[in-house]
Length: 133
Image: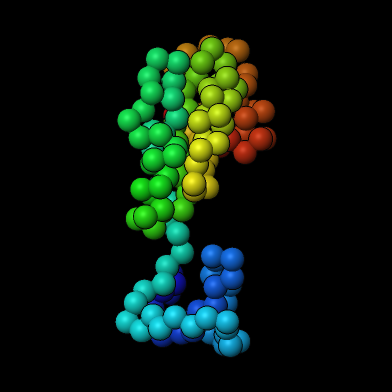
């Protein structure tokens, strides 16, 4: 299944990822997926898996990403909350995400939009933190 629709095709998988669609060389292992759909992993853009100084989430990265993967989600985006600075919130998120079984990214939540905090935004964007709430 692609953005253009679905079709019957051979699919080659290498290291757990779709590597080839169409003419696939003979593999060490064949799986008959006749009638099944083969999809890339999904992305969950709104999760709350990171802790805060005062709240430990019911679903942490270890458990939340295990459940996500079971449902076909291979990437999660978790909210991380400002702790004085936005960087401090990201650092806490990185510590929590060390237990992740899936790929992850962060949405940075600004709780105090002071001039100093707003001043952090350009460097966060340069570092790839583009989700902001």
